[in-house]
Image (cartoon, rainbow, N blue to C red; front, side, top):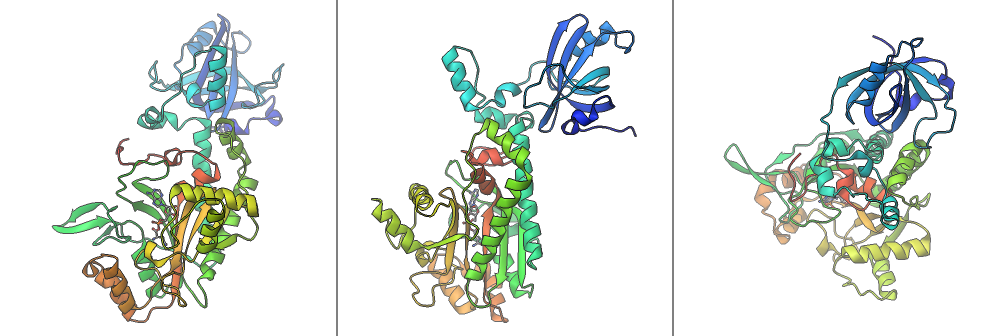
Length: 467
Ligand code: 4AD
């Protein structure tokens, strides 16, 4: 095959070279019968291609007309020579031009697209400025974006968001593998609810009632019973959420881990500390282009975090809230608003937007959570927050069958639907604990985006099953 060049690799060092590139036609500017500009886009990068009719270069006026008549978003191949432009180009495009020799249209897009990509890529500030100057710009609504997601995904910010997501997932695997965790895959068709509550999709499995897994919880624990010591899983999680919020999906990507505990469940918190500091560092150091690209459309402050992650007890958290005028039931749970407020208070006091809150009241945690040894009204559990929103929950688990059965019944779970899980702890099970992370939430909150639908490729929410 011929040598193809990536648009993102075109720079001054390539000046004078003949290249072959493929991209989506983003913009056409016919200047005259003899000259036209075409901007080609590939992933997060764009390059300006110049067509000038000239017998020497083998470029005809028909070719110029053909290029100028292409529809936006058509897939186009260009052969040409890299040149340094006379005047500097916009900072968002490659700093070289292509003097086109040949242009081929590989697949035409329809002339009128349901989304104008230029508008889809604008920042809120641009719309506000336009309103002041009287320029007519139309915002692309979230629903329209999601209805035509395969076009919407082409904006530079979206290209960057999903590259960041991929890096988080990769780093999660890489870091845990380096700490002797092994990757597992647990079933998603299961016989009973794993997290309890109403948020479960029910279905028929060969005539038997079944559920879509609300988490790998029961199976990652059974893998620990199976002798694996330390396991993790990256896989889909299904929740029949009936509320429409900015942070709930009906299907999301769960990053789960489970491990033997030798002495204290803080061993699990230490893994989270090392893991997330490694993820944040990696993103800040190795994904600069992606972060800048997201920032251009959705400006945000870099996440503040400490080298050693702050841990506060739930009681300390509600005390901080109390001092700031918010009363929380000490045996209840935090709501979204109080979590946000606590996030702000912690940021002011400790200078971090990433922290662990531990020792929650047992009553607000799932049945499999280990009660505190010194006071069973509390539990060996924790949540982890970014910018005042939960991204992780975790805990030490009950590892004796008697207590587990009792806790399931107390929490209103039919112990018969999970009897093989409970029995697993009768055959010798080590103390263990773990945690579950929502991948979309991590990316949303690291980049301070306002809606989880922005970090899900094809989101599933209570209203949406297509595309
Ligand atoms: O807090 P959750 O429900 O905890 C569990 O599933 C436990 N089995 C985890 C454990 O190991 N103890 O979910 C874990 C994380 C949340 O912190 C949140 O980031 C994300 O999953 N999450 C959701 N993300 C998007 N949409 C939803 N509906 C989510 N529900 C939870």
